[in-house]
Length: 239
Length: 240
Image (cartoon, rainbow over all chains, first blue to last red; front, side, top):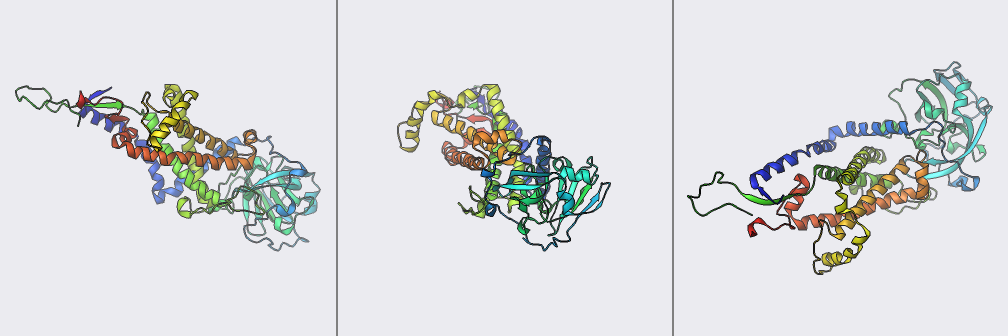
């Protein structure tokens, strides 16, 4: 391999350089108008892989009371208003979509379902996490109560502060996914989403919507997939 | 430059008057070159977008109270905002993992890893080479394709890359990969290790670039075409 004709070397150089041509494809990311579609595909690929990794019966780690962050150290982290002025007296949850019993549900009806109390880690997309104490009813029990078609693909929620979210059905049915009405053994305060929020230990925090007003079961997601998702966050957001 | 061509007698007819022999060696096979450049692009994107992600919570402690450690200049970051940076990160993580796995698989299958893997027997060669590079010490004899310091740098960087990938998996999927979070000391420490792995990987780059500049064009070109003209370890044809 020591001696080679110069012409031949030049020819080989060209040929070998051309073999790197596929790398030029990465340059497409530098083209402004291709960037968003390409990154959108990247996020969808990641979301698809995340869905495959989800295991229905695998539980998020739960913690002892000693590991729980003190109440005042559990962040409120509202995206906007920490008190959207919900009328707690007359509050109901509107249920719609693929359910046998649509209509208005009171907090008492939700509280009549088996109560789950769990200390789980709330992981924020920003990078912080906090172990909190959450109490409420399983979403799956509530879906049974309202006669939901759990073969549907999505559960979507709307909130009093104009926040909105949607979830894959597998996550909604997970045993740790709660319609949460208590934190730290007390009714939710206004900053944490009174009177009802989601608590989803297998999802990033922005999925755990607060101030719920409506829950629907559906097979299609509209243009509104989630407040942050519509601005570019991952939709699946599974942990 | 190096030439075997005759310039003397015009009557010494040659079939190929332009025939010129040069010294060259095929140093970097396609898999190495391809993964090198793909990885370079991925590391650049992941570090810049990662710094933007870190800026959303530049702290390794709790949220309340938050004690920010660093204020990273926006010019060093990619993505514009947290959501944009995450999109870059979640896209290029696949290219980083893919190029890394292809590189490691190629090294193992081809047996080429024997030339770059830093082993205990290479320890004794580190100091003489460091002294030569940084303290103007004598140049140690070249006995292998890569010297001890190169092996240390390449091996450590691959390990930092593996660490970045594993800690990244824990940050991305702490519930599904809780078994992997445990040896890292949990979710929060995994974030520290992820940052440290990036620092370790990036630490390689300045030295690497300085060496590339010092070794000149034919060395650089060999990472593009595989072929290195007049490699330093082979006698030049012109001197034959």
